Length: 112
Image 1 (cartoon, rainbow, N blue to C red):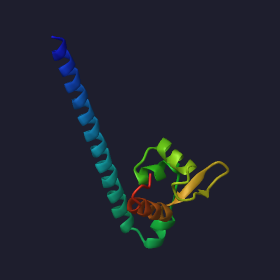
Image 2: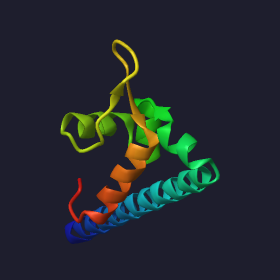
Image 3: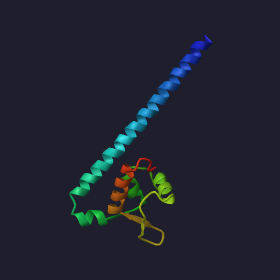
Image 4: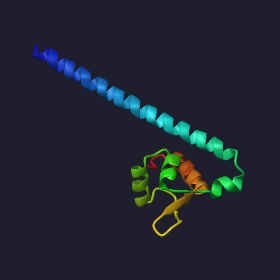
């Protein structure tokens, strides 16, 4: 009886791990789809306009497909492009710099 309970626990744990792995894969796919959609939208804009547009931290995080807290961690560790100051306490990132950084990040094997 006890061995059956242990086996069921192991089965549930294995299923939970597989589900978590599926979720991570799905999240990565969604992030890649978002990046592709944003890139497609930028391709329709005049080259100067799209690349010089300034995004705040929240929009920059969304552009890179990461959460705002993770974006802040990346900024503090120097793993995102340098921001520009758009206010006394507000930073912004140029879309062109973000796109270049994202392209560099995707070609670097251990970027994050």
